[in-house]
Each structure stands twice: as C-alpha cells, then as structure tokens.
Image: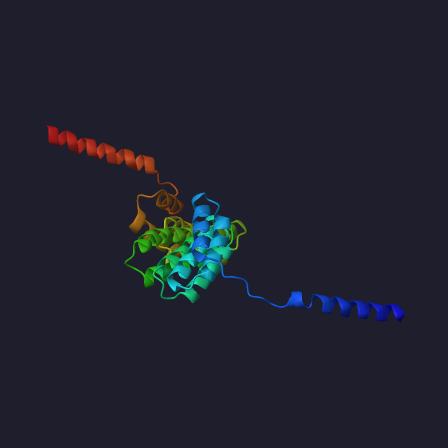
Amino acid sequence: MIVRLFLIFSLLFFFNCTKKDLIYEPTSKLDPYVLYQDGMKAFERNDYFFASKKFSEAELNFDKIQLAAKSSIMSSFCLYSISFYNEAIDSLNAYLKNYPADKNVIYAHYLIAIIYFEQISDEKKDLEPLLKAKANIEFFIKKYPNTDYAIDLKFKKDLILNQLAAKEIFVAKFYISTQKWIPAINRLKIVVRDYDKTIFIEEALHRLVEIHYHLGLENEAKKYAQILGYNYNSSEWFKQSYKILNKDYDFKKKKTVEKDNLLKKILKIIK
C-alpha cells in the first residue's frame, strides 16, 4: 500500500514539473516554395521517393490552390515512377477530389488508366487489372475523345481486348483438355461475340468447328467453318477446319493445280 501511494505521488510530482513543457505551441509554417524546389531537385536526380515526400509537404503548406494542386500531382507522378501503384492511385484520387477544376485533371485520369494498364500480366494471371484498365481507358476515351492521350489509350484498349480474348481462349483450351465441352463452347462464343476484332477470332471459330464435329454436331461445325471461310479463307485456322470436314483434301495439291492453270493461261497469252 505504501509503495502504491509513493508511485502515485511520484507521478503527480512528475506531471506538475512537466506541465509547462506539455503546453501546445504552433510550429512556424514551412516555406512551400523551398519544399517544392527541394522536390524538383530530388526529381531531377531520380530520387522519386524523397521528391514525392517534399511535394506532399509543399502541397500542405501552399496557400495558392493552383500550386497546391501542382504539388499534389507531382507527388502522384513520383509514386508512379517508383511503381508504388496503389499509393499513386490513392494520391491521384485524392487530387481529383481536392482539385476537380485544376488544369491537370485530364492528365490525372490518363495516369490512372496507365497505372492499371502497366499492371496487366499474361492471360494466365489475374483478370482484375485487365478489367480495371479496360474500364478506366473506356471512361477516358468517352470523356476526353479528342485529346492526344485518347489516341494512345485507344491503341492500348486494342491490346487489352486481345489480352481478354487470349484469356478466354486459354480457359476454353483448359476445358477442352478436360473434355468439358459446354464450358469450352461458352468461352469460345464469348470471343466470337465480344472480341471479333481481335487476332483470336480465327482460333475461336476453328475450336468451335473442332468441338462440334467431335460431338457429332456436323451442321453446327459447318456453320462455324463457313463463317471462318467467308472471313478468313486464307488463314491456317481455316485450313485446319476445312481438313476436319474434308479429311482427304490436300491444300498443297490444290496450290499445284492452281499454279499449273496459271502457267497454261500465261502460255496461251504468249502464243
């Protein structure tokens, strides 16, 4: 009991002695121009982590909203430059929320789309970055169609569509390998319906010919072969599909006959 009372009195004595030290005194405001210059110096020597920190400090100390906004987006870009993707997106979203009328809003939306695009892996990996990249790119193209950024993002959208189609083909081939024909057909139909402008449309049509013929659905197989032949009759995928339905057909022989006929026509003209 005596020990406990001693500890209480000691604590009270310590609190009274240090009470003056605990009084809050506001610190002097940092010079935002100096902070921004420090950030730029770090940025120029590629020390993006330190630069981001300085730009953030400058943003908090600037009274002028235009300079605060500029500091904010510079900080975001620095985070992107060192592949701190999640932090960069959070920073850009904060910028868009705090400075919706700033002149660099278009660039902020573009940078968000680029960050998601750069996180895309191959067709065997996670689908989420692909979908997020596609959504952000489509949002940008719709909102800012006549910008230079939109031209770049349209090209990237085509790459994303090819990647999404590749994902569907990859899954379909897995189902084919395990003889799960219905899920395989459904995946291939997605490519035909949604990604008909990609390089994977020909393979998707061929696989549909292949599966339907294997299942004894010859009319369905012919339907997809006709689509493939009408649109891509010179492709290797069409040749493979044609051989499924015409097993004795020899493309090399056909080429030789065509070449012979052409030579005979030329000889007649010469004579």
